Structures are given as structure tokens and as C-alpha cells.
Length: 229
Image (cartoon, rainbow, N blue to C red; front, side):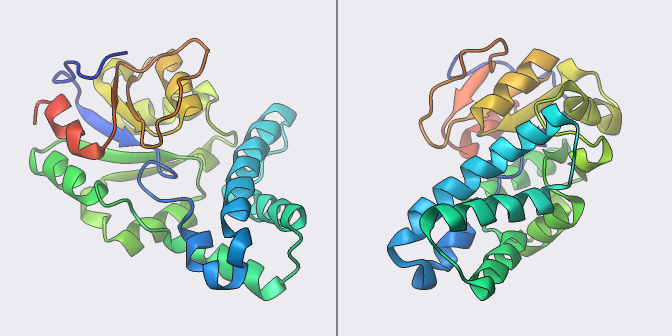
């Protein structure tokens, strides 16, 4: 993996949503007044369980959409932090529909779309969640397609989820740039054959698994140049 590479031969750019375009901690942050000193712990457990439950449900073959997974993981986070508050739970769940986009998202998407390149979201999120988040961030005209794993009934990093991008964008995997901030997602997409850029927002280590990103960036500001735009 390198800091820069030649991705000028790709025909479309697909993005993971949560942690990549949208801040998964935004809901807890907006409820910091009610959560107090438990806000950070709750946010961390909520996200960890959210991911864990997607992987467990994929292995078990008992898929439910990401909205239900998000609620179940929040219930676990409440229990682990000793919170019992139905109104607060409802507030946090509703806020997940309107997560904040990171500041570097819009400028990068504007440059990519201005150059005529197709863009897509490829996410574990339920369609209603993704549509709401895109609308809230005002990104409708900058995203050509929203692809949810709900259509295949299994979560990333199952290979069939990355095949969605190939089928919907009508391009071979080697001509699709996939951008994710999640190391496990990076590994899965690279193993599948997509051209992967790791948006390492949080200075994490790569997974010790097959499937490596072609390059690593710290901000989406660097992406258009990688694409030759």
C-alpha cells in the first residue's frame, strides 16, 4: 500500500457510507446533554456491536436490515452503560437518519462529479437510512446511485455485496474505485477485486488479512488527484 497511485483508469467511484461519508458518532454527540460522561463509551460500544451484529447475522444466515441491527446494538450499549431511557433511545435512533457528513465529503464529491465521473454509495445501511442521510447532507446531486446490501440479504464483507457495485455501475471490478474508512471493508473489497482506497481517518492499522488497499489517504481532499481529476 502506498500514499499515492495511478487510478486514472477507473470509470466510477463507490463510497462506503458510515465512518467514510457520515460520522457514526454524530448521534451520541448531539445527545451529549442527556448522556453526560457516558456519551463516548456509549458511542464506542454502539458502533462496535453494530458491526459485530452484522458479521454474526451474516454467518448465522438470519439477516435483518441495518435499522434493526442499529437498534439492537443500541440496546446492548444502553445495557452496558447502565442507561434506561426509552425517550433517549428513540431520539438516538431518529438522529441516525441525519448523521453529519464529514467536512471533506462535499468538496471531494463536487470535484469528482464536475469531472463527469459516476459516484455511488455501497453500504450496509438500509435504503431508507441512506436516502435520509444523503438528503440531510444535501448530497443528492452528487451521488448517482445508492446501493444497499439489503438487496442481497447479507452484510459486507461478503463478496456478493461488492458484486452489487459491478452490477449496478455496469463496470468490471478493476474499473471501480472503492473508498472506505473501515479496514475490514477495505480488505474485503480489495480481495474481491475492486480498486480500493483506504480513507484512514482514524490512524488505524490495516487488517492482517488478504486484501490490501492500493493506496491510503487521510482525507477525501486527496481523492480527486488520485483519480486524475
